[in-house]
Amino acid sequence: MIVIRADGGPDIGYGHLVRSSALAAEFLSRGFDVTYATTTPGAVSDVCPPAVETKLLSVRDNPDPFVSWLGDSNTDAVIADSYLVDTNYMRTVRDSVSVLAVISDDTRFEFAADILINGNLYAESLDYDFVGEHPKCLLGTRYVLLREEVRKRSGTRSPVREQPRRAVVTMGGSDIRSYTPTAVRAFDGFDMTVDVVLGPGVEHTTEVEEAADLIDTEVVIHNSPDEFLSLIARADMAVSGCGSTTYELLALGTPFVGVVQATNQEPIATALDSRGLADVLPMDAAEELLYESIDSLLRDRSRRATFQSRGQELVDGRGAERTCNSILAEAHRP
Image (tube, rainbow, N blue to C red; front, side, top):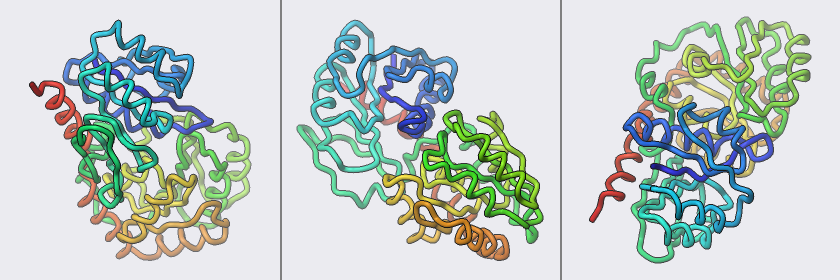
């Protein structure tokens, strides 16, 4: 059995669940049972494959209840994806299981793990500190955790159209800064259809609908759509937060304007900008600034084509497969 320790929801976002669910699906496809140990089972049900099971934990930051439960389970490996899994938490879990893999975005803790996973653009530039034996490090976009559907669609993008017809707005599972209405209004006057994706944690649907009614552009609102990847795959451009969706857009070759939605997205935004992978705006960018960025990108077919090719060269969608292979190799090591 594979156990994944992760939480998600409107208050903390859905990123940890989205990326770990890619690993869950890969393990399920190989015949493993997968259980989420979580304080948010409802969010797991919303985001993760239906075949996963859940174990409800009463606290997020104390490893003792989790380790106690692990002692009664037949676990091949534990995968932790949480900012509250600190060095002590890692050491406590590592003493109880054969393999501990930790998914992290940064270096806020010393790592006590068998495998460290950071699939971000900037991962290889960070200085990591470790406790005990040096872990196997899976760093960079070869290990970014994306859903299988992304892998299947990557590399199949149609040529960039001279006249864009569709756009997507997606600000994350909960749109924690309520930025979607601003993004919708910024499309006012463009001759195209804008698909607006609202994640399971979005609570300001009325404001989004009001923004759509105010502008002279066709807007279609989608609530937690099953066809999300189809929407971004067919879009000529997108406006997105700089979280996990960034990598789906790169893999599918969809040019985009990225708007920072949280401080932990700033390193991704910086890397996108420095590598010429997208247009990037700061947190709470004004509507006028976003409008100018959208207009500039829509007018410049050459730049959209560059973003498309660079993104698909960098992200092939096979990170979950490679990561699963590494975890299983570690689990079967004598």
